[in-house]
Image 1: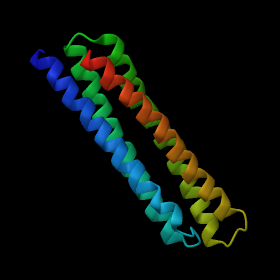
Image 2: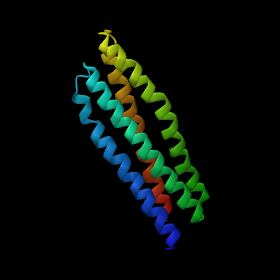
Image 3: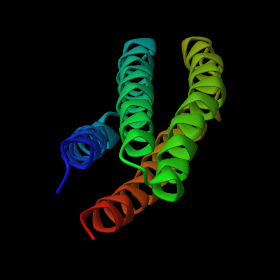
Image 4: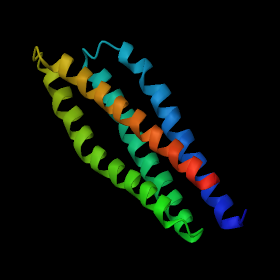
Length: 140
């Protein structure tokens, strides 16, 4: 195994660890009632941090895979970086908007926030499956 491929494997492992950590951390947050703006801000900050970390680790993985000569798998890692950017642009403003409605006692705000939270978790699970595929592809 070349040093470039080893670096790619380490970066992909970091991407796996980041995504797994945030999935395992976000599921217990579903226990929150999401009935206060503080709950909404905390969950929003948690996901914002995840998207930044996911972007960094996926970008590092993609770059290291390109250097290792695995451009096909690098494209999948780059796609995960793009997905992190797109999700951050979509999910975070949605959480901000719904969080403001929670403060206004808008009746549908709490269920909408919970749906957004759950949707973000489910998308992260799909990302985790792609990361596992990347690790398997890199290790071959």
